[in-house]
Length: 390
Image 1 (cartoon, helix red, strand yellow):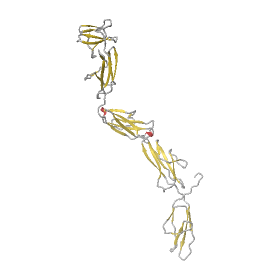
Image 2 (tube, helix red, strand yellow):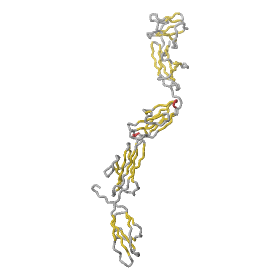
Image 3 (cartoon, helix red, strand yellow):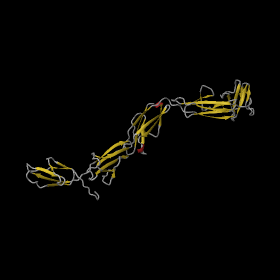
Image 4 (cartoon, one colour):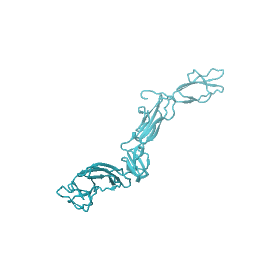
């Protein structure tokens, strides 16, 4: 091999015979230093040696010595390819076909492109993790022996990554996430396809783009998913049944307000659903009309508290949002100081066009035929004045 000569030994069997009926055959494998009586059974020789044999007849000198020089070469044991398909890669182990005596030195040379391995090929040292289809060939060479006569060969496929489906339960909903089991062997071109009706997923099923939420309407949904990677067989199908406990709360409400001369305009907003609200100590929540912001008027300094929640179809009430803000009473006269545009006549308030009239609780009222009390008139200019019906 190359510039070296390798001499190896192979077991052979030798039989010896004599024509003399009363003769005994003796043999020696150490150059005649010791002689052993041959029992007639084939003799197994496991090394390169010279066998000497002679015939002994009582009363006569030993016969001439017959010699047989054995020079046989050993070939190495063959290698074998052991594979185990994992998600995203195939694990390849190269081993001797047979158990070798302890201490036997050997190397296994291999190729992954289908070419024939030789002493210059890569040396196997640890299990191989193949992420692409390949043809593995392996050649074993034992120390002091010729390379094995047989080259182990196996064409390997690789299975796409296996998947984990996890469900994180929230209040009235469950968040579902799908991810590869083996993050080490993730192909950037890999796709996750899934179904939500319990059917087997295919390459044309819905593409997973990120975690999604399952609500009470889909309680008991069975999700199945596979990973598809270029050049690999499809991964194992992952399956999970998602449970949802209770109804999901509706969205939150945002509260904002503005103040102009003692009149507070309160605005409620929510991403979806209807909004209900209550002012101060009111126990009954009213339906909020987004087209008609709440107007709150106070004739004395104090605090206004508003509570509000949203209610979406198929969900329970959302979290109650609450906000309190300081209010300032309106100081003014019983009629307008703005060129006499507002005046009180009996139990009615005369207002200019575009003005709005509110009672002290902030409710809009008809300015005609009012009971005794304090009222606020908001002019089209935005200014607010106080009017007293006595």
